[in-house]
Structures are given as C-alpha cells and as structure tokens.
Length: 284
Image 1 (cartoon, helix red, strand yellow):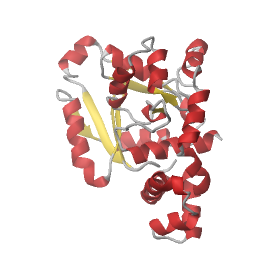
Image 2 (spheres, rainbow, N blue to C red):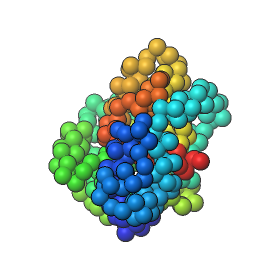
Image 3 (cartoon, helix red, strand yellow):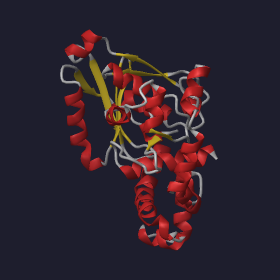
Image 4 (tube, one colour):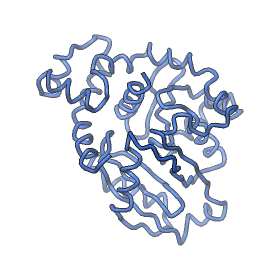
C-alpha cells in the first residue's frame, strides 16, 4: 500500500472511528445509516461509500460484528482453535495478508542491561487504524503503538521509558518501508516480519499463543490460559496481554471476555472494535 493510500485510509479512519464509537454505544437501538451519517456530519451516501472503502463492508453489516451475539458465536467456534494450531505447527494461520511473523526474545543479559548499545529506529506513520509509532532494531520490530497526532510526545516518552539504555533515532524512511509492507493487503511476499520481544518468560509464552489466533477469529482470556497450559491463570494472561508493545502484529485485539464483552485494549476500545470488525469483514 502506498503512502498516499495509507494517508487516505488514515483520513477515513478519523471519520470511521467516530462512527464505530457511535455504533458500539447505540447498537442495541439498531441505528439507521442516516443516524450514523448524521453523527459524523456527512450525507448517508458519502458516509456509506467512505465506510465501505475503509472496512470492505457496509456499516450495517459491520454493526453485526460489534454485537455480543457475534462475539459469542466466535467464542463457541474457538474452543479448540489454539490447540489445533499448535498441533499443526502453524505460528500464524492468518499469515497476516500472506506475510507471517517470527520472533526472538532478548537474552537475559540484554534484558538486564535494558538493551545498552542497541539502536532503536522509530517513526510516526498513517495506517488504516489511525497513526502508529513503529520502532525497530536491526533484529526486528520492537514496538507498534497507535495514538492520535496530539499524543505523539507521550508515545515517544513511553518508547524512551521502554528502552532507557538504547540509542533512539528517528528514521521515517526506514520505518516507513516496514509500515507500508505491514498494511499492504495484496502482498504475496512470504518474507517474515522479525519481532524482538522484551518480556518475562510468561509474557512471551502468552504472546506466542496470540500469534496463533487466525485473523478474524476471537478467543477468550480463558482460551489463551488453557493454550499455554495454565488454565487458572486468566488474570495473569490478561496482564501479559496488556503489556504487549507490538500491536496488530501480536494480535491482542483478538482476545475478548468469556461472556462476549470486548474487554480492554491498550490503544483504546474503539480501535479494538475497529480491528475486530475490519478483520471479520475480510474473514467473511
């Protein structure tokens, strides 16, 4: 996807985000297309075209993906999903638009030294889900967060806090190439995205389980806990998911509550719903 298309999708998302928040809040009243369009201050015709361009489906159909009934259906189908992907040896059945991810964890020495001597490149870029801050090293992607343009400084401070001993360098050209590949929906390349994970052994085990959830699928915290062999550790799993620093690629947005509620999301519940609905539209 070109930078121009990414910029357009980012502009679309600003309107779509408002619409999703409205749909999520009022879906039990089944708002009409006219209701939603009026909320974002454009005509129903133009809103429908904009939404379909971004989501790949109509606003009415997208609304179905945000209901608890749909979430429960997905949870019912996911009972043995993670176990099946482990048995087949797949690391990421969705292959992330025909691309896949592989990872390596930091060594104990690197973790203890907080990556002293390592160079972390970063850049801010538009995506279909709003602006992202991508950070990477020569060994792989080490961070992908989402934030509003007004939150850039706060996001950057979090990056510095995460890598206090590393040298941070802004390099939009370097990070932009990766962002374009990440959100290029038609790429046929099978070159993996390498991830550099910084976390405890338990956190990394949880993140590895998340990588096995196919695009468009939803599982519960309990499913993930069972998949890593610790069925009573749902709360700890939730903490590990909340600590995930590589959004989208490590798909923590695909984990919801057992009763079908969306649960929390590090980068905002509306964005989580956008990701879930966007993937559901492509799954169908």
